[in-house]
Structures are given as structure tokens and as C-alpha cells.
Length: 515
Image (cartoon, rainbow, N blue to C red; front, side, top):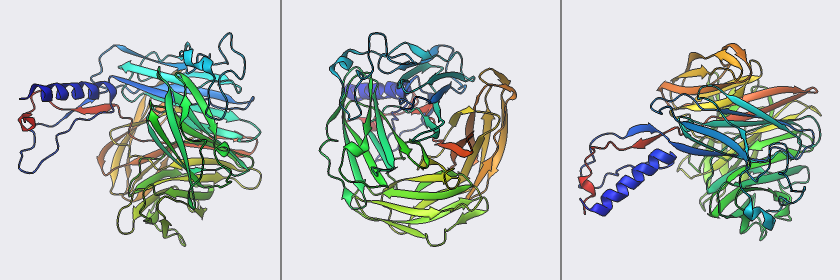
């Protein structure tokens, strides 16, 4: 065998085991025999997560929950920690800094940030299987950079939850801290006068990242020279106010964050004067069929926003996976999305008092799209909003951190076929014994379940969802809280935690790769 080929295979295999983002597979080629032996699923050895700065409100109260599921085959070594991204402590700027020195809201950073390093650890988990919590308050709480290796890496999950009692964006804000990447889609943003939307960009690395931010509305791309070539300095975070990138005021926009060099974490914080606010997480990658799980049964308004990144138009069938099966909303049987343009459709109270998930499928040919819904609960001046992006299926395992004995709802849907899942409640952060339950989700339905609670629970706990049999499962977790009569809530989807990676067996026959 060619030595260069062998070296490449060995290097790729090592990368897959370490990062969890690379999968080595041998494609079948005409006239060749497929390599023998199935790839083994091994735990990832190292991972990273980024948490955006939680709020600009002085009365914000933020909690962080870190959790790693127990994973077989990880050994006994390793650690995980979260640090302030820009040298700050969890309570405000680092010593020697004054407010305003850490950059503005337009994507440009001060020169002093080029020398910054991550701050001291603010949250350090002690063992897999048990959550660890931390908190901060006010508007100076920084973005966080997290790393985990060894037994703490597979499935590591960090939840950031913020309560804002009053003012623009008041309510409950929640977001799962995400891995750095180079490409993000956010359907559902706005530059209208009643919204204040920021895209938060966090750079965890030692070199600067260069980012383009593109906006797409109902008529296509919005003109903006300001959004091109934004520099995010090393170990820093930059909240970019979207309304500063264009003179056009539009709701129902799509933002595309494209990283030219380096990598960043990205999330959109949408703050509304009237209906509160929340985080909008990135949509799943563009695909012909999408699932948006976990619309609360008491939603009073649901608005679907979809975007087709290419030149081709997309025609989508809209269905709601309800507790009794797939139904077509009257008057909204299909949605037409023009290529390169964003389409917004008001679905009203589509769930009609029952649990539901939106299922979008092509009516004819498959055209890749991205999508999200904005959900509103309550009426009049007692309304609160949240977002649900299209998401990947649960896959092997998914985890939701920061659950309490009351106020947590787990929503599971099986759009293609019946599925059985095991849901495990972890030990509590301050005490409690794990417990598991098994649920069967009928084909084409959504089921809202009151999740199991650890025996003797003290503190918060995590939920782990693992499919046992059947078709693909999609999930979301809703947190609720009472905020002066406002039905405050936030929804986080449950994609696969990517805790394992496929690595070819050592004795696999690789002769098909010979030159």
C-alpha cells in the first residue's frame, strides 16, 4: 500500500477520535469491493463549547448548568471547565479594565483585545453524571469559552438560562452553548423598530476570525457593506446589532453568518418591546425536509420563517405532528419559498391546545431550505415569545440540562415511524438518585411528557434521551416560569450530542485505496 495513503488514513482516524467532528468512511466505487468490517463508535476525546454574553439588562439573573452523561469506554481521566472569553470574571470586567473597553456593538473591537486571554474558570464540573451549576447577574456577565476532554467530553452539554423581570426582552431566555463553527443560518430575525436583535459572535482561538453577515428578506439580499469582513479578535466576543447593518426595516429576515477565516460561536438574541424575547439558535443545515419540534400546546401564535439558500424555489408541504397523528393546518397546506428569499407565514394558534411539531416536506422535487418558528404564549400585555429552529434528530443520544421538578416539559416526535426511547433523569446538582423511564411515540405524532424526576432531588438535573428502536426521533425541552403574570418560557431543541464518532476497525482491509 502507498505509504502516503496509510499516513492520511491514520491521521484522519486520530482526528476523528479526538474531535468528534470528523468521520472517515470508504465510499463504494464502481468496480471495487467495499472495505470489510464496520466502523466502531468511539467516544470523542476532546470538545469545546461557547456561551454568549447573557444580557444587557442590569436586572438580569443568569444560571449556567454543565452536564456530561456517563459514557462507556471513556476511562477515568479528563476535565471540563468554562472560562470568561475575554479575560473577565463572571461578575464583570477584569481588573484594570473600564466599561466600554471590550468593544462595541458594531462588530469592531478595540486593539487591547488582541492580547487578551481567557479568564479564570467560572464553572468546573467534578464528575460525569452529576450537573454543576453557577450563576451571574447584571449586564456585565461575559461570554464563556468551555473545553472538555477525556471522560467529560462525550455529550458535554451546557445550558445558559436568564431571567429578565422587566424592560425590553423581559422574560425567560435560554440557549444551549454550542461548538465553534464556520457557517450558521438564523431564519426569524428582525430589523424592525420594535425589535432589537443582536448576533453574538465569540472567538475561542488565539488568532482573529473574519466574518461576513448577510441578511435576506422577502425580496432577496439586503444591501449592506458594513456586514462584510468583520473581525472578531482572539478570545473575545462581539454582539452585532443587526439594524446597524442595513437601512431597511423588515421582520421575518434570515441571517447567514459565514466565517472566512477562523471559527466562531454564533447565536441571535431577539429582544421585543411588547412580547419579550429569547435566543434564536442556528437552524439545522439546509435540507429538503425539516422538523421543528416542541411547539407548546398553549401557543397563541406561531409564525413560520423559511429561506431557500440557492436559486431554486422550494414548495413545501406543511403538516403538524399532533398527539393523534399528522394533520394539515387549514389554509396553510403548503408554503412557497422563492430561491434566495425569505418567506414568513402566520399559522395562528395552529396547535389548538395540543402538543405539536411542524413537519416540512417537499411537495415535488427536494430543494434545501432552513426554517424556524417564533412562538408566542399569553395575550394582550401578558405575552412572551420564544423560537424553535429546525433541528437534527436525537440520533444516538441527546441531553437537556437545567431541569427542575416543576416547569420542565419534554416534547418528542416520530414523524416517520413509531419509536421507543429511554429518558434518564440524572442525579441532582445537590443530591438525588438517577431514574429512567421508557416511552413509545406513535408514528406521525408528538407526545409531551412530564419528564422523570430523580428520587430525592435537590437542585437541578439533566435529561438524557436515547432512542431504543424504531424510526428517527426529534425532541425539544420547554422551561416555564411565572414572571408577574407573564407566561415566561424558553425552548431548546435536542439534536444528537455527537458524543461518539465512527472510526474504522484497525484490521479493516484498505487495499481498495492502493494506487
